Length: 226
Length: 119
Image (tube, rainbow over all chains, first blue to last red):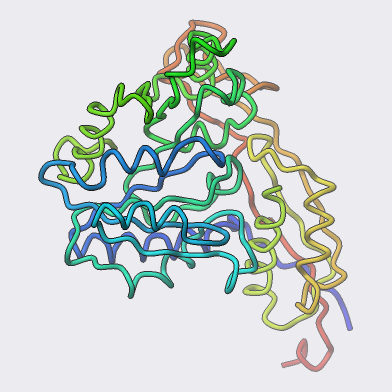
């Protein structure tokens, strides 16, 4: 018995990225663009989707709903008569706190790709792990609610850097909070200079038009963000 | 908290290259921007590797500092905080990560039995 050193030099997440590329190729073949939608729990992902999934002109949207358990969010969106597929990480994946490429791959046969132009993958609410795992998406969007505080970009730089759009939600709460929006934007620009951002309120509808337009651009493959 | 999922990614990568041989050391290069807590990664690695060729292996972690490079003024510097603006010229749009995003299995040490070595 002797020991041998084996040089590897391989990103440990390459295996996930390879599966993500296979997913992306399958989505491309079906002519479907994909958004990975991420945030902390309770930032308002589902509420923001409720505003846009059924009435984004010219873009048929489907949702892949990732949760550890339950189908509460999927039920809310299915009520709007759009195709929703539930993916629970609990029964088969040990309650994972994020979606990875393999989980999304396992859901592929259930997705009605022929009926949609844009698939929104609502990730498990979590500001840490989802940032690490590509799932085969064209664009990544994250939501940060003003109730979470101004310092979040500095605390979770991986997530705030791993997206092409930041939706700053719950701005209807600004009069009731000590949240300083300028301070938040300063921190956001420090971590991810110039990243696109839209201030929205799922409650009042402020900013929703702009959010819908952004999504429509991704879905219609026109002027799509890189 | 992401150390659990990252440990799984390490074990999968190592198992692929170990080809069934027991692994005694796993050497990782980990960039500071990955925000990995070394003790937590070691704890989960011990847990996730159970029942695989990595069981009982020592996890070595080399921390790679986060360094940025400004394409405008060609300055290169190390950061402790996640501030991606150039302290020299104030440029933000052309700042690139030079190092610090690694999460790489650099090498492993495997135990070979003589009969395999002679083949």
